[in-house]
Image 1 (cartoon, rainbow, N blue to C red):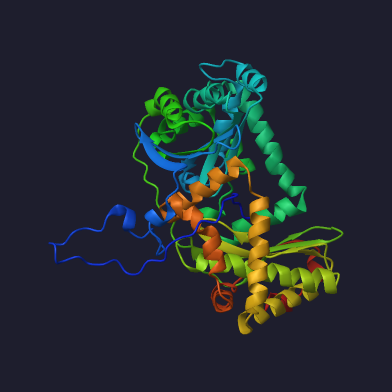
Image 2 (image 1 turned 90 degrees about the vertical axis):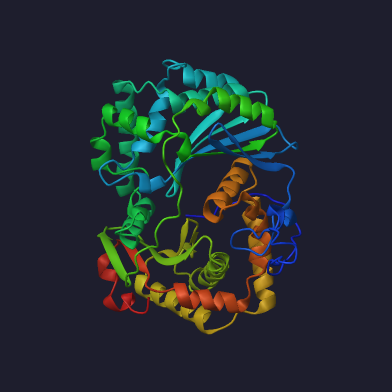
Length: 459
């Protein structure tokens, strides 16, 4: 899983000291604009952005970034909670519900949903993630109102015809079954299940064959009634549309949903366990290995430091295992961006013992040595450039703002991303490597005879 982000200009931010306690004038309060943002010394005033605002429309929370430079509009509705809203028996229910809404709603019967979107040149996407499910539209400025009408109708009034639900269920089941045919998909599924066992993060956002098979239309309707409520929603819009237009559309649609009693909170910490392997024996030309170690919560100062440390490790693994030793065509040290982060070790190789030993060596080098400061600065700059180039769309800007709001309590913190990365020191990299890069729990798909017991040691 790769990090996501946005294109954002680096804004200068004032570094403030401790807030003054005013007692001479009777205990005046610090103005809101001068209060420090969560997890940082910067203030709201220091990060003032006139193009991005936050407001509420009849109980629906909205973050709105005006982008006059283009006429593409991305509007995402985040249904909060993700895998914490489900259990093992109904895993996959939210994507099934939202995908089935493509087959008809009260206002757009039969094929009208798809023909309307086709005429507009718009798309609606469903993206179930660990901490939320994103239901979003991509449209032109001229087609935004009509596309929003379709999205809102799908969210509020899906028909859920039994035959159509069965068709979508079969499509999702086929996707789930294909995990067994694709070693990369299988090792990813196994790694999540094994590394986060006992925590909601171990649940599959798409569900399992068993859970999808047992989801009825009645269960979907009950879930819709209970879970599609305003308190679970965060709407993020990035595009060249004005606030009055957005308020009008939401007032006519989502504002009419029940409020509900959901409250967003960060998930509990992940369970700490020792290193280990989950093995799926397969006769393959190469072996697939993916392991995760536990990281810090998103509000921690270690969050960005571990992101940088993972990038450093990834470069070292590539240089040693692929370039120098030629033991793989794919090696990585991913940083998994969630409310509680995790880091990973991924490789495909015909020599798992040798490759794992080299991985241990590189982690040890990171933990015991200190990376050159100038080299770190160059790496961070390259990382920032590639990160933004890969995530420059309006849709990714919306995701970036949503993560800042939900993970750290204020969308403005998104504008600190570059500054926070550049503040990571060589000592920070060493410190987080020592603290977090341990107790790795691996999934292995391939020839088990090539994996010896000694390969498990040292992680």
